[in-house]
Image: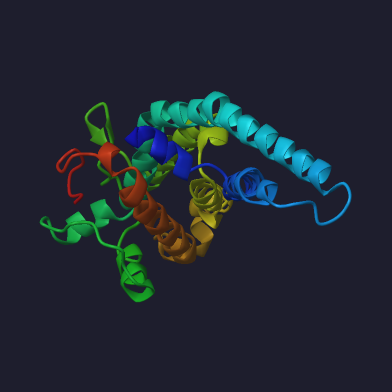
Length: 240
């Protein structure tokens, strides 16, 4: 019963508003107005007409709720685990854009969202081509640029899995994910390969800063709506 009530609460507000109107109309006609004489010719027929419409809508609403709304909510519940895991994977990849830099500065550092000045200072401290990233091949560390490419591809793969299920997501999550997917971080990513405008990540500060702000917004949403699928502490080194 509690689950049905939750599903009912999530039903479209306009449909519920019409339901209340037609229920009130039906009871007023059947239990109040029918006790009085007609105030004009044809009033009874008009009342019967609106009473029939009310019954029709109430019946249609019940059918919609059972066949459409409950199925939709159950589909969402079944998919939420996968969506939750992928959302937190996107958040984690966002954190890892700067977390390894923070750890290089302080081995005990935990992830935190930095302001523009702090971020600029951090990004200016690392050469994109230095092979110091927490990603290795054949026993050798990859460059920071390859690390960023890895995180980008991982996030894009998460989006590919989520995108085919957009019809099961709520509007707020779709809005946040769309902003992330269409952010400057992805559209201007190729700038990172241009050494003419800088050997560090400093020239990509605006893109990273705005991207992390979007990740923060996604994290707030996820912690409110998908927290049961959040990675356990320690699943990712250095993350809270």
